Amino acid sequence: MSAREIRAGAHRPDFILLFSILGLILVGTVIISSASVVMSQQVAGSPNFYFIRHLWSLLFGAVLFAVGYKIDYSFWKKLAPILIIVSIAMLVLVPGVGSKLGGARRWIHVGPLFFAPTEVFKLAFIIYLAAWFDRKGADVKSFLYSAVPFLVILATVAGLIIAQPDMGTMIVVASVAAIMYFVAGASISHIVMMAGIGVAAIIFLIKTASYRMARFMIFLNPSADQSEKGYQINQALLAVGTGGFLGQGFGQSRQKFNYLPEAVTDSVFAITAEELGFVRSSLIIVGFVFLAMRGYMVAEKAPDTFSRLLAVGITSWIVVQALINVAAMLSIIPLTGVPLPFISYGSSSTVALLLASGILLNISKHTQGETRESRINRRRNWWTYLAGSSRN
Image (cartoon, rainbow, N blue to C red; front, side):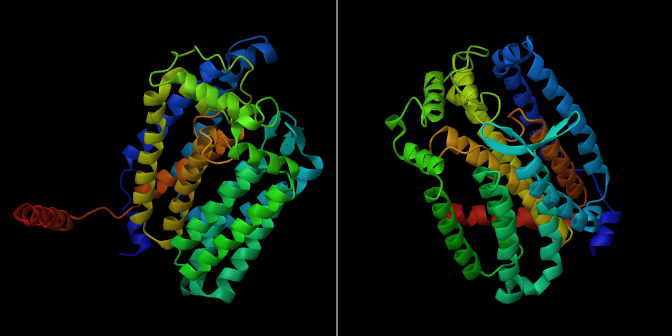
């Protein structure tokens, strides 16, 4: 069956995937309503300032989610060149005209709009790579025609992102790109070579920037500097430790009273762990694991190469970013400044993720479902396997 025939016979979307996304959004909204009260009161004199702004972001994101869901995924393949050019242009503009916040110049302010171009770029880059690898076909295994151009493209965009500077986002983008390259059929030797180059580049970036080196040394020994460079990670660990198994209770966080920086953005998982405890905050991780399973299932059953790579890219973006955020809050990796998808406050991230989720749900409508015959055969094989195992 051709991809066109499958699209013509589109069925219902993956509702389990949809409910996973909606569940994470609901949890994030509830958490932000608690974590943002102190900051909202200080900034605007109202405890609901950031919560209301988050609801507006969800409303706008819901519109884009509907757009992504309704438009056939093949449309984005046609739009890929324009999207990547516009998003790269915004990345080029950021160091010069972008707004500076927290020591980094990562935002563009145009009238009432205040957004992070890197969030737009993530989705645009995923769409572009899916289309690019699709065009490569069998040449994706070629070193000269695939590996070299891919390295040049990745090095260029990584350089633009690190110029802001934003090493966390650079790692997310590079990781997702590498996963898509692997799924597209790249040679394992090329992947290993690129992984080596990536590690060498990260080491170089750490050594050539004093604040990155300081952050890395704090990661190795968080107690070495608890008042300056290591302040945020120590406060995050304190929040997680204080929460224990069952937490201090919803709304009872102490760290959100200006002790833990970025309480509603990068550090929101630490606040969650403090209020809800290990058991309930772990359910968020379970939610991301479940979303990953359903997203990759959509990719596995996708009707063509472009949709498969697009589903892999979107799912990997969510999963890799969530993994990095949570791991940083638990001091498993050095502290990075990436938001927790669907949970952290942030208009740009929320809107971009909802549009991407809509596209992923659209692909799920066109996945190749099981026929009655294949389902019977699968069950028969399963029972045969169980019977054989029991005899052994």
